[in-house]
Image (cartoon, rainbow, N blue to C red):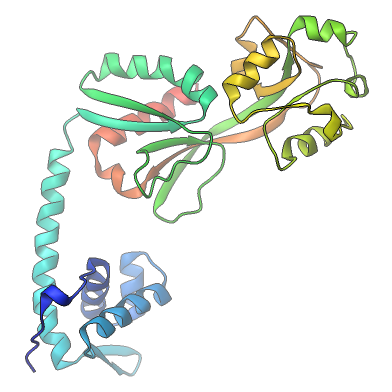
Amino acid sequence: MHIRMDWRAVKFDWNKARAFLVTAEEGSLSAAARALGMAQPTLGRQVDGLEQELGIALFERVGRGLTLTPGGMELLEHVRAMGEAAGHVSLTALGQSQALEGRISISASETYAAVLLPPIVAKLRREEPGIEVEIVVANHASDLLRREADIAVRNFRPTEPDLIARKIGMADAVLFAAPSYLAGLGHPKTPFDLRRANFVNMDRSGGLMKGLNTLGLGLTEANFPLFTESYIVMWELVKQGCAIGILDAVIGDADPAVARVLPDLEPLSFPIWLVAHREVTTSRRIRRVYDFLTEELSR
């Protein structure tokens, strides 16, 4: 059987071709799924999709295994050659990425981008002057799969299988206010003393109020007359004596314009994760920055 088709009319998908190639080499979907590190149903759908696009059967089931059809055997030769060519391209690109120079983008929230990252980036530039750094300020999670950033500092663990993540540690979020505002409240000493205090809200879902109420504050929506999605704006409102805000303790304690509210109050703890796309770890440059950030943020 000789396969003839107009390749210009075929929307080629290398993932499907690779699924076919590995399945043919391994002899079964289960073995191929293990080799590729993916779920067997996903692999099966890719093989089925390739058969539908080409309009031919590629495999016949024999017992618990699979055997190639005549059309599948002929196609295998072409796909195997493509796989070898793709490997050469990958190795060439990988070799080019081994130089410690070029651009890398790091995504972080406003406060981390403005306070934590600059001294770290300054140190990185001193050690690796060939690396150009772009800091992407995003209070939402940047889409690493779409390359909105190479590396991201997040407060939650990613669930996408193509992302890798390293937990840097835990951070404490505590309440801060200007000394003048605390004086106006009569220097509160217990959570009950904050029942008439104002807070800057940054969460329309009410999550901040719920979190604080788990600490015994007993707040209502009336306690949140101010709202902003910007951490920088929130912090300026706090320093101006408008209300109480919540921030990473390391950042807040370093600002002499504010003081902790109820220093003995239990903090709201959250994790810090360093996240990157699995493929970018093959780049020596990005691996260097990823490891550098891990070490510096862990201090």
